[in-house]
Image (cartoon, rainbow, N blue to C red; front, side):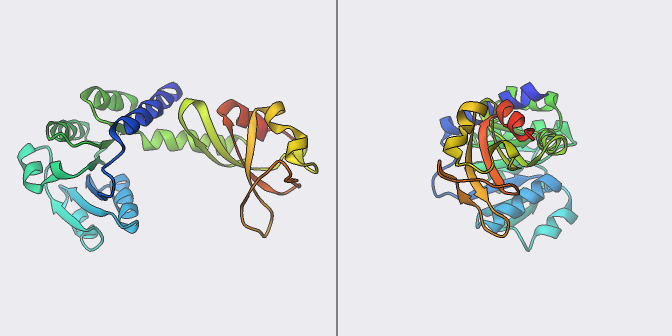
Length: 240
């Protein structure tokens, strides 16, 4: 699963570059499926000022969000005619938040591809589900449970306070400063040469985060932001 997630991130990044992510200035998105994933995503986009159309077959779910999202509709998007009537094909970005009903997820994704929606995101509940969506041509496949599980695993097993992995096994980590680099300027401790990582930010107790420089001296109890290859930051955070 780990290798699949890494390759998925690389393909997602390439497609974002190829598609230009979304039309500049066109902050419209349709979210199909208002379960936990879809509604959480739609709520956050609404909070950020996006024009959100929320769609679900469950009238109770739609009613719950009708006063929050810009537009809502009770509709079955497995029917291509319904998509056309709602004008979903005119949106620059559409999210398929349907998870447990794999057949519906695939049908909706196929309909969106037929409508030539330029930027389709779809939730998958398994690697197999994700591979089917990718083979259809869905631009971005998200496995939220698996990706969150991988992230939490890093937090549980080490000294990391937060962990974000990007393409090509590159990670950004928040961690407590190990004793091995305290008391001397970062340039003198040669963390990049010794450990293959870069300290980019620092937070002293009672202070806000600030950027780190070669002259920055980190002390015991400081929280630091570190970047580098995943294996390198994992090793670094385990230092005493």
